[in-house]
Length: 169
Image (tube, rainbow, N blue to C red; front, side):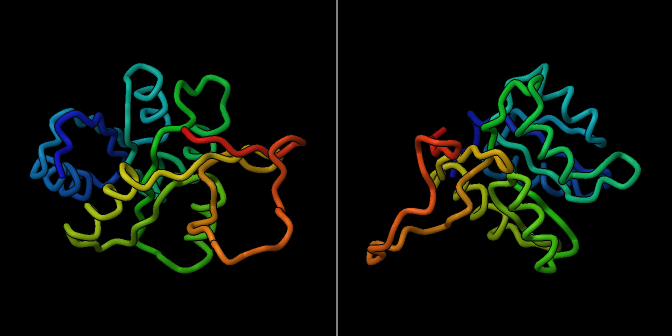
């Protein structure tokens, strides 16, 4: 995988964790990496820079909440790219946290500690296995359905014309 043309923002209040992620990314050619410590810094960076991928810790300590940042990226009218790919990292991978990240619009989720292979697989999925985005009154983000059941022959639950929509980014 070559990330030399991908513009990445790493958001983590733990500088050692951020440096580890940046080192791994640099090992596969990433050379345009920004770093933010707080949710506010991250949103400002997104507003001032063209970013293709956000790698974000779910808990930013006193610097904010990663879930709130994802919600803001997806829904704030001032967000320059609500479709940006977001990989959420966390040290607590219980089901509640995974579902919370999914439900605010994170594309992928990875538990800490992680290994190089698992981080790169998630990034590869973000780049090469994109999912369409869904907009409804209660949600905007990547389609939460991971796979299509080709054998399903029932009624569609999501309408593309009245309130809910599905579109590719």
